[in-house]
Structure formats: structure tokens, C-alpha cells
Image (cartoon, rainbow, N blue to C red; front, side):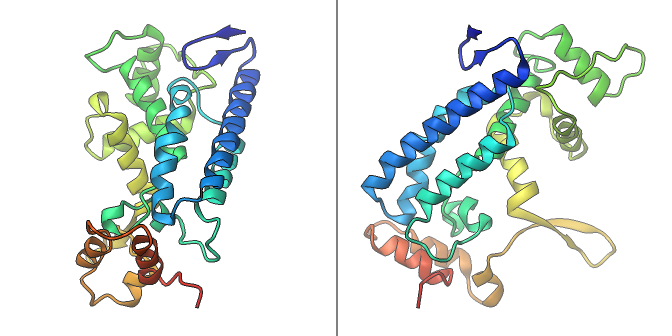
Length: 254
């Protein structure tokens, strides 16, 4: 094996995925275990995870995709810490939604890592600010631009057809994919899969709209942006914020 900056490379790609994935799972258990002892409040836990856990695995995400079992285990351990005292879970929408919009503000490790892998590929293939890999440029031209006058370079195992489709979809949305940052890719993927939904516009077409939480659907007449702002206003104690989150989202066990 080779100890590279970011991850350990083995002779077989499957072994590279396994060894690095097992390392991520072990690190997650150790960090989450230490955090469980401290028992911070519900609204502070996502910040703790975003700050002390997830950045310790992002350095691997630029080179290889994570296995589904790795993502699932990281999510399981994260949810175990996040909702340790919560009988009813708020769901993905409230978990990943920005705190200014009434959510907990947890980052999605799945889409964050996808965004980083896509951005790294585009940097080495078409971004004018970086030196390009001839191989990656050929992949971009053949699979994304669909140029037929070149020989099929073949996709490596660490770049999937699903990733290629995401880039083509972003281009169809008018995005300048060559210079998009990982944050822009992350926001785009989160809106597509978690935070937004397609809604009929009444003219036979569809438009993207922000998904509404259960409380927002039950009480559409309430000025929710103002409510969410007040629930996170400065001066509230560490006990008030999690109580208000549970109260406003009907998560109190009464």
C-alpha cells in the first residue's frame, strides 16, 4: 500500500475502499462516543458534528467515493448522538435545513462528499485555474460533452455514471460547472434531493419549490420566517432553543 496525502492506496480498488471506509467508521464511533458523554443540547449537537466529526473525513472524499455501508454507518452513529433523548425524530428535512429556516443545520455527509469528488474531477479536467489531467479531460469530453470523434477513454471505478449524470444535469440547469465550488455543488445537490420538490405550476409545467415541514403545512397562515428567526434570536438560553425547536415542530412528548 501507499500512504498518500488524504488516504491509503492499496493494489486493489476494492481493498482501498474497504480499508479507508473501515477507518472512517472507526473514527466516527470514537468521536461520537466521546461526545455522548458530554451530552450537549439538541440544537448544539449538529454544530458539534459539523465541526469535530465531519471535517476529519472530508480529506478522503476528494479522491474516492464512500461506500454505501460507510455512509449508512456514519449516519447511524450521527443520529444516535443527535437524537439520543428524542423519541420522535424530526426527519431529514428539519435535520438538514438551515437553522435560519427552522432546521438543525446538520451537514449531509453523503452529498457533501459527492460535491467534493465532483469538484475535484472538474478541477483536473476543465477548470482553467488548474493543471488538467489528459485522462480526466478525455472523460469530460466523451461522457459529458458527448464528443464522438475521440476514443472512449473508459470510466475508472472511482467515477460512476451517476456522477456523470449529475454534472450533465447541472449543465442543463445553466450552471458553469467548470468553476463551481464544493459548497455550490453541495447546495445544488441538497436542493435537488432533500430541501426542494417539483410542484406543478398550473400551466402544465413544473417548478422547484422549498419543501415545507409538517408544522408549516398544518398552519400555512403563520409567518414562519419570523417565527424561525425569533426561535433562534440572540439571548436565548441553551435550554430555550431546543425547547422551542421541539415545540414549534410538534416534537414534544406530551
